[in-house]
Image 1 (tube, rainbow, N blue to C red):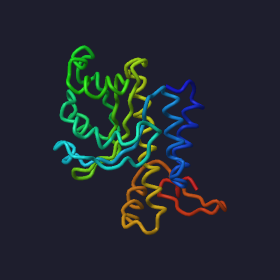
Image 2: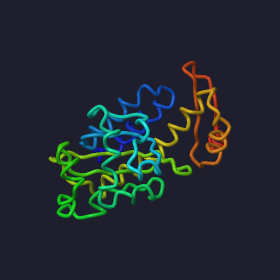
Image 3: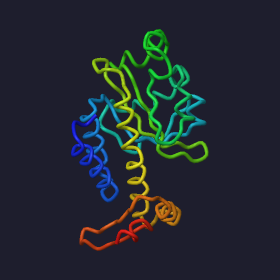
Image 4: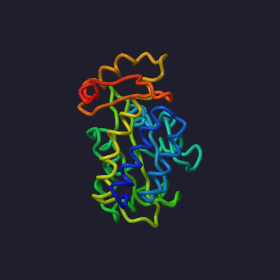
Length: 217
């Protein structure tokens, strides 16, 4: 986990910067990746139904750099993951790491480990669902290298803390896109959350404030 409260606050601040400047997502995910000593980190939207069928999933929304094209190749291996379907059904903001589902010794005997994990120089993974609608899932997925310790309670707590902020930043970013047909839906959702959300333009003009922010103002 980050070494201090200030470091965590800085990461959260960078996440909200991405709401206004989506091009900052790779940089922000890179900062989280470095802070947690990860091999790979991405925000991805997947079609749970197609994934179960071994078909290609959606292109990652944002990611820290890794091997190009790995996601399309990953789909055909999904059904070989021990306990792989569990994270699809997990509650929002609930990180699940691979070794919570199966022992490492058993995992290393699996076809998935031998065909995918070992060849990529990885060891463990952790997935946190961010948004779920029908069979579509948006998730934060992380992988640790073979040299890293397994994901533990501290790592999962970090993902749990960051998850709602990433979701809100994605929602705000979509809301700022005036051509997005979900604009009114996102406004309604933001008005319902207890955290104050204020959107300010580069000219320091208040663009939007939800109900909680109105009370603060």
